Image (cartoon, rainbow, N blue to C red; front, side, top):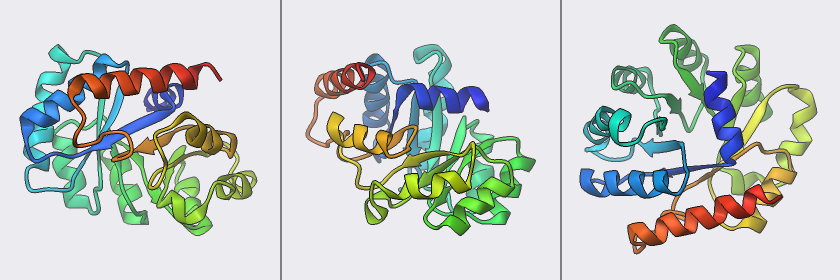
Length: 211
């Protein structure tokens, strides 16, 4: 599990998306992978999510070796069980509860829970989790993580929601205490071709690694 967190920290961004079409989903994963991305969040936001995710996991070992494919927007233990069976590498939730945390431990799967308040973060902290998603990040601002960080030594924070896919904005969050950021529609635009997405991500990763 620590190796997954390290991959996310090294990458500095976690692209997240959902598309009803499996072929579009596969093409998006391929474009991100070719750009150098090795951790992706597919979101559980549509009726095809589980089927698409299962197929993506089935082909990833051969077509995308080394890729960590996680699932996001998981809100209850049934969904967690469904995606655990589909061999999700990690599970991201928009919320946190003792039930979700303890269930993830019982399934031996890395949970990255969505937290908003210090009380939310404390649930993760007291249960030994090492990475939380701060969501929605834009509602809290770039000083929030730095403000609560001293209370939770060793905790890693990944703001998601309202983060712009440009170097300056991402670096502001990283300087504010984040180890990585989640990027959705600001990065994966519906009118992008696969080549445009690959080039966008390649450039972004290169710029982030210069700092």
